[in-house]
Amino acid sequence: MDAEEIAKKYTMNELRPVAKKYGIATSCVKKADIVRKMPPEALAELEAIKK
Image (cartoon, rainbow, N blue to C red; front, side, top):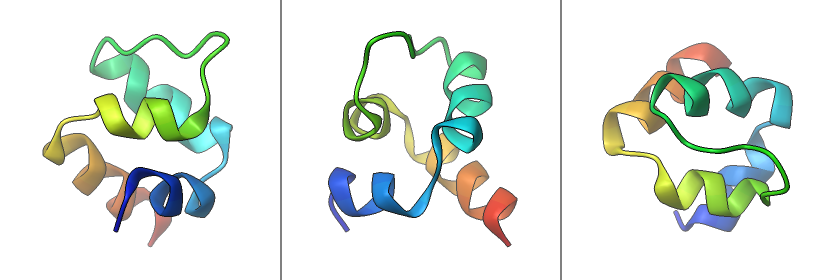
């Protein structure tokens, strides 16, 4: 899955806490850009939150 498809699955409220944990800026940034910057373990954490 590419970043845009992953970003569509989550709201900004779900992305923001995980991004902040990994030091990724979330102000004035598109969801897809946040997902691109996330390491694989952050994406795994998002999957766990959604379930």
